[in-house]
Image (cartoon, rainbow, N blue to C red; front, side, top):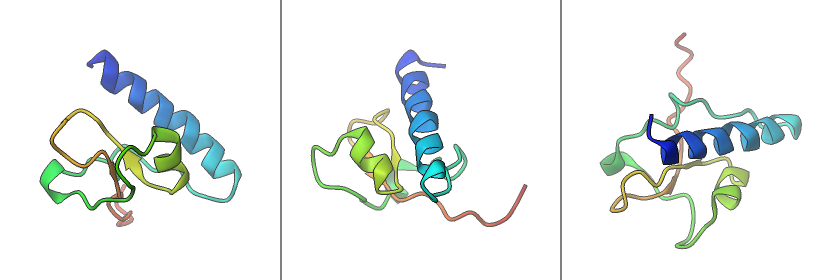
Length: 79
């Protein structure tokens, strides 16, 4: 796994654990695996990963031409 992606994933897990402690469910990696062309913007330009996660959104900078802070896919109940 690319080091940058690993670090972002680790940050997401850490922030997610804080969100869970405050009544928000942590987003899963599956929920945040949204194709770049299908992402719906969840933050203003320049939003930080922490600000994005605090809004309950996903943050992924792996594609510089895509939206970085975006809404997660809804949890459809599949296991």
